[in-house]
Image (tube, rainbow, N blue to C red):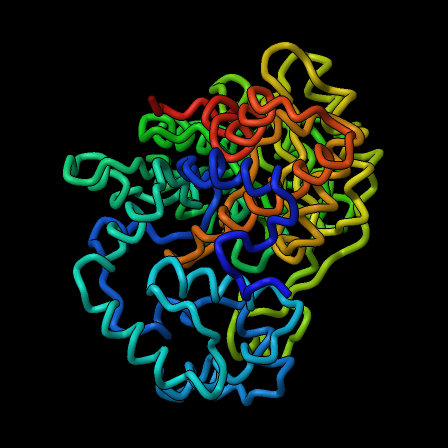
Length: 470
């Protein structure tokens, strides 16, 4: 029997162990997509207790606690931080097969030096140990980032954001980890939302315009803000889509649709899709001009529990996989950009693992020599960033495309302890490759193998996104 989560955790073969310990383990972390608050980095936040770090906004954990029958009082309610932690510890002790079990114990090992098991019996021990350590200067936000060997972080930022905390970080020469904004214009695209017109007023103000009264003026406002983001070092965009749609429309029809919404009229679903298609085509062309990479996250049906949405709002653990994502429309969308040679580097993520093969075949239709794996399949995302999901995504990508050109893992997290997800991913990567080598499916050529592993772990992302790193 193997020891519980020891130094060779998930590494089944000698080749896997060598690839991880000699190469992947030592490679820095580049976190090109997360939801970290840049203010907390700029102010070098110190957390009061482990609940603030672990449970403050982590809907992964909230979902599991609800599945364990925990009352909402101990999840998002008014219970004390200690009570919430104890409930979490009780649930985690039985989280067999769930990635939360591995993530949580990796974090306890790496940041707190705790190599035991967190459950209802050890809750007090871990609570006291973690809180004592969190009060040390070495556990401030910046020091957590530094000890994780992170070189660059991309946050997620709305076009109206002033980026004031990014400005402060850029001017602070005491912290050498780059923190760059990433452009996330979902609110400018989601024309069907009740607060859309209010948002347009804020966008106009941010762009120095008196008003946005047409689709053309919306595009001008966005170009203005893109230029500002670019001046702040942004070269990555991200979109949360229902799916990658393609419903083309004429300029006149689009202006009519936009005017209809300005007049507070309800759009049809077809009108909404035509507007969003035009919005995304405009965005893609601008990204090509700016040499930005475009990330497309899709396949999520959000806020399914209306009762809880009304109590807690979005991003609280009530989303699910949506299985409607016509691959033909995604191919047509990419084709509409490539026909005029305006297709930017693009990373495609689906929340539905059944889309792996469809994505893998679409990638090959749009590659060219301007970048290695110019059109990428993104890492196993959200409900898929567990052992099985990561393996399936990488095997599919290897079968249908270029795994060696893959830009690898990201945290997609709001927690400063989530950098161990990169370690988790790298162990799974090295084990997968190690098994292929030991099964005689690839030679034991460590010059090539070490290059593949370090590239997927770090170098590919640095080159692909063209980050200003040495």
